Length: 353
Image 1 (tube, rainbow, N blue to C red):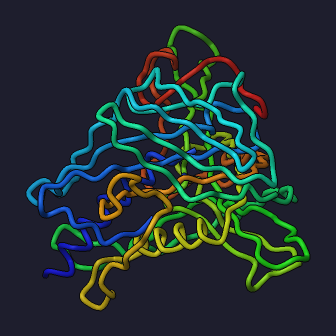
Image 2 (cartoon, rainbow, N blue to C red):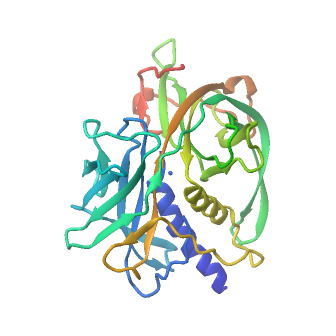
Image 3 (tube, rainbow, N blue to C red):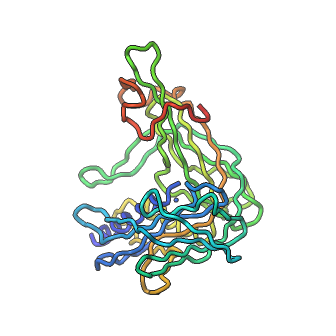
């Protein structure tokens, strides 16, 4: 029982870190004492894109065992900078979201082959820093493939018993040619957009819109070249749902990692994959690369990454694989822009559709 509770606490913290990093480690957190922990999640890339080059800062409060959740609060008004190994410094500014510090396009000076260190100063004078992260190159994507298949997952039912859950979907894979040298590490993220139609009733043609689902990766996907060094390989990165018989565009971003960053995400994924049974080992201590400058004994959660990034997308014609299991799909009624069925809806046709 103690191991299970500890596992729930750990997974709650890890999910907070994963949600903050998306777009992007393992820890035996001592959170029973009421001590807040600083959570740092962010990266810089070799792409001048403010949606990628940002850092999110939060405080975690003690685990609420009744609600099975970790309470978080944003860290505001911090001074955040990234410095390279040549002494160049880049400021990150807060906003518009509280606790999110972004590298502007005007201040961007990130290059492959350099090392980057994150520095944080809070309004009360406390300072934090990361260990230097080398920005390694990443090979180009050789393409994206998918396969329509059945999945079997092990989940807990309402009675707490482990059962098999069957579903169908499109397994999407990144195609990669690993370089000849050893020691390449990767992480992948995804972004999904799908079209949908609604019945407007008084018009002969249905209205069409597109919904941006953001990241659809349910787990952190990271890998190394230990078994594929110098060879071509295909890495499963996400599952596109088989629910609506319309086109689905999935974008894959491929990031380079250092060996230390890969180990962080590997252990993170290991914790995510645990089903929490009594046969699972106790949660591993997963250490990030952040530390307190003022107090070496203070625990800081999370990881700051420097990565090269490449991306590509594919459009999956799901209608060719319908009908899907379950109730027949029925077209919603009304203007697709205002049905509020899906997030981030637009009637402007995205690239690829």
